[in-house]
Image (cartoon, rainbow, N blue to C red):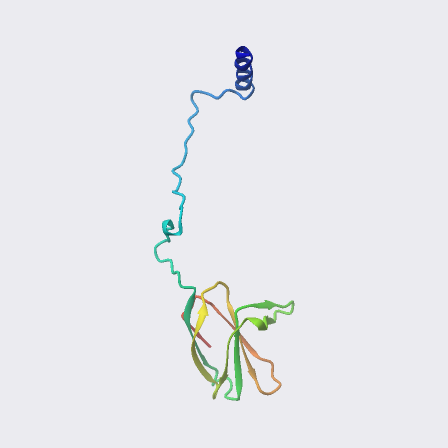
Length: 141
């Protein structure tokens, strides 16, 4: 039985190439595996706060001073005709413009992707549309 075990091992080594004495296996330093949340390390500058204060300043008085209403949305779709269609359930803020101006500071989820804003007038004209970068501290229109 012992000779049979040696024979099988030799055949496996020969069949698998047996390795070479000149081969060196390098194992990279592995990062320690955290065992609890207290062991986790965040990169420098990482912010754990998912909500930030967002400012919005609108001044379209040179365009129009009529009654108008602004809505902004965190999600939207681009249609085939290049129009931007908001996902209405994703509305972030809604407010009236007075003489073409409005200003607000509101809590906002720090996420990715642009934000869509629409200004609707109380007549039959289509809305004017603008997109904003989420990373900007203040959105100007």
